[in-house]
Length: 151
Image 1 (cartoon, rainbow, N blue to C red):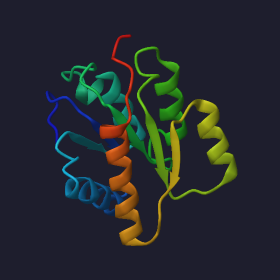
Image 2 (cartoon, rainbow, N blue to C red; image 1 turned 30 degrees about the vertical axis):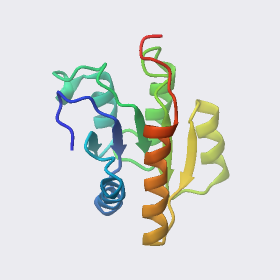
Image 3 (cartoon, rainbow, N blue to C red; image 1 turned 120 degrees about the horizontal axis):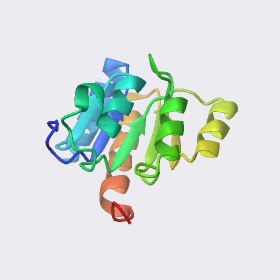
């Protein structure tokens, strides 16, 4: 797990501890979790990304390279987190992958209307879930070529 001073590659925004542990385990198996930060609600996610509140000492330029975002979150829901990230000039290019249990068409449409980069329904099967998460990590951290920050 990353510390506040590390460059963060993955920000996991997930309130369910079991889903968070499975996600981190899948990424660890592929050696992709060394620079991962986990927050448990939408308010913490916004504080982390914008380096405010509990994360005021963190340098906002230190990532994340990708956000794995659940939609059903306490305090601030995932749609509002996505809305704020994509509306801000400094964060709108950060890839956001919604990883949620919802398969509802209105949720999918709303996420794409707000600029989500990918929408994935969490598989119920453990092996399939870990496979999907590992492939997500590989793609967004190793294959995808994002713009240079500040460009």
